[in-house]
Amino acid sequence: MSRILLLGSGAREHILAARLAASRGAHELFAYMGANNPGIAALCQGSTVGEVKDVAAVAAYAKTIKADWACIGPDDPLALGVVDALAEVGVPAFGPTKTGAQIESSKSYARDLLTQYNIPGCARYRVSSSWEGLPEWVAELGSPFVLKPDGLTGGKGVQVQGDHFTTAEEGLALARTMLQEYGRLVVEEKFVGQEFSLLTITDGEACIHLPAVQDHKRAFEGDKGPNTGGMGTYSCADGSLPFLTGRDIQDAQAINEAVIAALKRATGTSYRGVLYGGFIAVQDGVRVIEYNARLGDPEAMNVLSVLENDFAEVCQAVMAGNLGELAPRFVPVATVCKYVAPEGYPVNPVKNEPIDVSAVDTTKVQLYFGSVDKQAGKLYLKGSRAVAVVAKHADLYAAEALVEEQIKRIKGPVFHRADIATPALIAQRVAMLKQVRQGA
Ligand code: AMP
Ligand code: GLY
Image 1 (tube, helix red, strand yellow):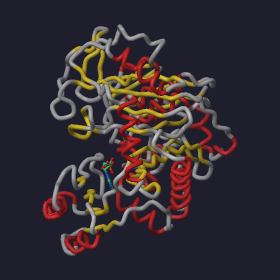
Image 2 (cartoon, protein in one colour; image 1 turned 120 degrees about the vertical axis):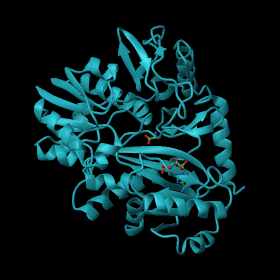
Image 3 (tube, helix red, strand yellow; image 1 turned 180 degrees about the horizontal axis):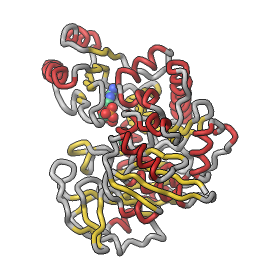
């Protein structure tokens, strides 16, 4: 009997809990959650609610429940060294150490690693702690640019020319205030193309590349409105995406492999867990937007819905460093995941209003709870992405139709993006990249 501690409380962790609870081995599941997630709690033998950034408290809980190993969902605890803290109390974990997690927690570290190890796909960039030289750098770039705070900002603060500011002068003024707030910035060229996520499970040597996924960060249909954690995602039966070539996928996988090898050389230790490459397909290939040190949310719902291997065995192979002995198997189906979010999300979401999912046919779609709580048998919105609705089907558009059919049965003050994974939106994406690739 082995006892697993799961850290986190979103829909990503709900599907992790479901996969771990369904594992063939005899396991007991415990969760340490930032907020109560009734979906996770129902799958666990025990759970607690606490601050996930308090890595000492997480390690103490792991010790109290006598966890054999831990599975880490969110980014902040990884960046703060939860894997190191757990190791100190003798609990191995699926996830990178603080050193490895720098690939996500420091934008400059990620860019410098790509440069130092001659890994293709990097942006032209400069790391700056002062305003001096920035106007010259922006002039030298001669293209639209992006400003990224260098450090733990909870994934916030990236400013893109054309989206967040218009002229170079406005961008430079923004850079000046961002320097005051964050101390250090990465200033890099802006890429134009189609973004996609390619996640790789690794023990530092062997790699299992997961199907490519496209996320939709904007809150509203037509890619309008503020950025969110991601309103929905899709993946295709062949592991690629409609706008990508086989070469794009191979290149992105090769870049992830090169980063994993570079991390080992740079840090002297194996990177273990998930390496999440945020890519963009551009005119002449693929480029790296960013790296994350964990599963994506919602990407986890796509990739974990098709990875057939026993997930606890995958985690154990990663921690033991023998992932190479495990043959990955995927169900050859497309996946669509759409979130329902409270009205007003992400700026001014309604909270504590009831949400009713009881009419959803869970033989047709899977539901994974995010920011909801349960009281007296009823679910309540807690302000962030509430419930992820996930369908699998050999045909992408049939999966999309299944999600739409069922998501409409959810009652409450919520909204979702009906356009995600529709033929119209995907045709638009394909046409956009085609135009970019023809040099238009
Ligand atoms: P990040 O916080 O790094 O995920 O950045 C947020 C978003 O900013 C990304 O999903 C992209 O849409 C955009 N972005 C970041 N870097 C670039 C870049 N070099 N070129 C174009 N868009 C970018
Ligand atoms: N879906 C974006 C992220 O997990 O960072």
